Amino acid sequence: MSPARRLPPAAQALIDGDRRALARLITGAENDDPGAREVLRAIYPRTGHAWLVGLAGPLGVGKSSLINALLAHLRSLGKKVAVVAVDPSSPFSGGSVLGDRIRLDRPPDDPGIFIRSMATRGHAGGLARATREVARLLEAAGFGIVLVETVGSGQVDVEIRQVATTSVVVLVPHLGDEVQTLKAGLFEIADVFCVNKSDLPGADRARRDLTELASLGSVDPGWRVPVVATSTTIPSGIPELWQAIEAHEHYLDSSGKRLEGERRRLTQEILALAESRFVADLSRDPSLPRRVEPVLARRIDPETAARRWWQERRKGRA
Amino acid sequence: MSPARRLPPAAQALIDGDRRALARLITGAENDDPGAREVLRAIYPRTGHAWLVGLAGPLGVGKSSLINALLAHLRSLGKKVAVVAVDPSSPFSGGSVLGDRIRLDRPPDDPGIFIRSMATRGHAGGLARATREVARLLEAAGFGIVLVETVGSGQVDVEIRQVATTSVVVLVPHLGDEVQTLKAGLFEIADVFCVNKSDLPGADRARRDLTELASLGSVDPGWRVPVVATSTTIPSGIPELWQAIEAHEHYLDSSGKRLEGERRRLTQEILALAESRFVADLSRDPSLPRRVEPVLARRIDPETAARRWWQERRKGRA
Image (cartoon, rainbow over all chains, first blue to last red; front, side, top):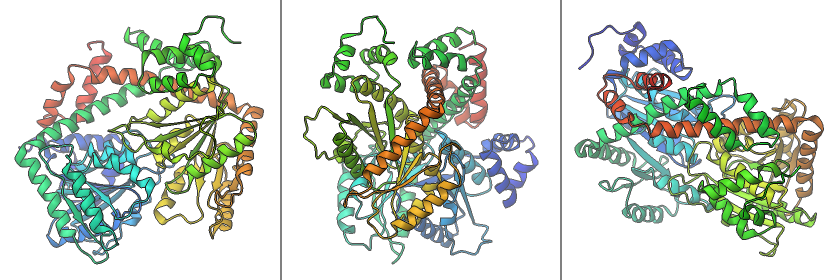
């Protein structure tokens, strides 16, 4: 299975479990560094078997605490786990502070845990690309389970589905009116529902409501979306949440849906990577400024300017 | 200034103030309908003078109530105002429920107000495109002020800046820890800060903190971002908020920054429109499925597959 050709030294260090090499490569992948690209290419044949579990949901539902509880549970089962916390909030500065919210109750030198926060810098598709690449690096480093947490935003939550093998949507018993509007979108990406803060009043009701909604059908007609109640303060429901995630992974394997999902995700990935090359070509096109001026002067409209540009480039003039 | 050529009947109806024609054209623009495209092309020379005021900020800061209060104030000044409420939450279903949150205290047949909610369907750049087009239709129909409200999401809030002439960032006195992380991104798009719910404790402190932060500089070094405290329950601060928005619009005119901003926005618009044409070409490329298979079989990596595709298309083979 594994290729005979020699690996770049950084890739070998990664596979040998060198955490500093891993951290450097993640940074390199985020920065589109040629060395990291080479490693990603070299390790690609060894990847594709990890579980990527996405945790999506509005702000304030306690996703970080839930991740902490899941980490502790998975470590007690002897599993290696990585966490990627994605922060789409500051596209200009590229800063990322979410990682600070994962508060480990484990020894900081536990080799079975790796935590990384990432900023997506507002690129459309940025989350998907960065997360896929970081997950491959983590998998090559021996982390077979990668939990991906995002700050709640409809658009980013949907991107998670383009990456994760299993998507967990986290809600709480009493959501405000405005947050209700988010639910519609979240429903369509859920493989597992989690009612967190289930020690609060209204949890049973919320669980029943979600179960009823889940019974109306899911994105995959062969899978009935389970609803799990959790609390990180009591704590309760954490092993059950993990069992529900495992059940979905087993379903994917036994139904052949894993390969189907992987084909869909890779198609999207290749399309997005090719798109970004063509888009970069466009934004570097020296004719762009002179195409804007007649539009600014209101002599032609933007759509016409764009159509002409497209036609001229297709004819091979640019 | 206005062109001599004859307008399509739907465009003429729009300009004559026919509200049903306006509503139909907005739906047509959202659905990329050829008739609406024709009207957008025809009216384009008459547009470009409206004020597009974006209201961004996290969920729960009371943007809808603030819009209601601004509407009442602007009507008392005799101004025609349109509101576009953008709901990025449900990309799959395309449903939009935010419009329900704008509760008018004005007679429903007031011809000086037009309210519309839109879903962006998760398209990257979808908000920007739809909002620009709807704003042009509204401007042609005589609405010189268009307020654009979004549900709080970092990515969408940033898109607002690609459309709005003035961006108001709305915050409240006590933001939770998680919402603090959103602020970094919002700071970089603010032309005006609004501390809403200023009747709550901590409002003075929040206002001072924001003023201090605003004094550290803004995206535009020539403009000092004002901080306005508002409350829709007392109510207070609404005229002051509008004055701050007007002051920014006057600054744009007197400094020449309006033209500069319009050039930047049109450049982005033309680029995005051309991109979507090339991206559509790509996704229809019949070679895509056979390019995915070797990647699925882990014989080549996604980046290599994308690069080869790009190279072959550039050579004119596809």
